[in-house]
Image 1 (cartoon, rainbow, N blue to C red):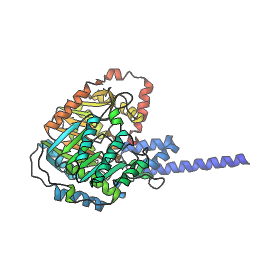
Image 2 (image 1 turned 135 degrees about the vertical axis):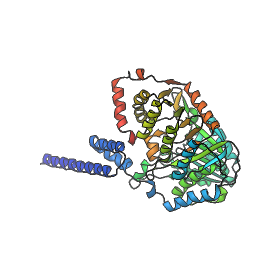
Image 3 (image 1 turned 180 degrees about the horizontal axis):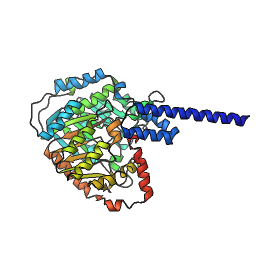
Image 4 (image 1 turned 60 degrees about the vertical axis):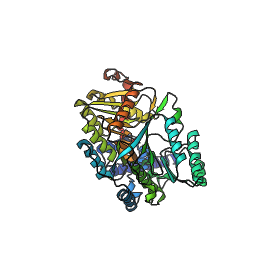
Length: 476
């Protein structure tokens, strides 16, 4: 009798699971996402139904930003400072630059600003020292946003510096990503709040109500001091960016900006602040009058999961397609969307010197294995692939034809392009491009260029594993 009951119960559970999977697959198909992403979800749900349903519950549902942020307040925040505080004289640029600038202006609301001073950091110690110096000189406000704000020696050093400024009467606001800082004790941030720092987690994930938010993470790293000095790039607030990893250094790229381009960084931060704190900050005190200070022409471009446009990805497509001589790329993870992959292959086949540098070893295995699956196709098209051997390459850098360059938080992968909140600085001056080109070429000395013939000799089981992981690249 008990055996019959167990059989009936087992059949009922199996039927419920089957129906749930079928309904979920139908929902995925009706979403009309990209065929690659849709196929990935169908494969996961078909062959790993239990795991697939759990992953879809957390990562697959289309909970977009318009459901999380008031569009009215968002528009007020972005348009008001742009119109009132960011006026500038007209300037000339090349046709190629104008095309990309216009795209970002029309689709992203990003204004180009000339006359900026830019400092480039490839060493965590130098960046931290400059950041602490800028914090120490703050008179009015400090806005700091980081995907990871770790409770370690570096995190506590920055936290204590911020607390000292609050005691001097400086306004301090801190944003950190809730998922990026899951391992950090709440007491660490409570100490900030108790000292007077306004600190908030972006898109808190609480089971079960807000699990749909876990897939949309704020990956931006932005700091603004008094509205005049800004920092942007790939470095988070954590000790490993200084100490490195067990197999070598942690190589990253970060920028310090002085000039009107800081308006763009300020707007990016205050937009995310409104989304989290629901306070609308548009006072002119946060957008001080500034004169030209340097030669860099720059746009601060954000991207997010809202709507159909993927601003940074589409901008990179324009940049790749506009390349005439060369395009150099550094990225820790190479899981390109189909348009990016086709553009890279096409330009290489057209005779453009396309070079991509990735780490030989990575901090996460699945994206790294997925990255390796793309290398055959790229090298066959003529793309030169370099493996960085000195440590972990976390730099997100693109430089093209000595005239265009970009540094920011966006990786060359599905997650950055499709799901994350990202921000990049696009620079249109020769000086910035040459400096970043030299950074790439210096790192090339610590890298090895792959040979297609030798690469294809790796064991068949590695190829199989990489190919299987690639099927799920849109979900990583």
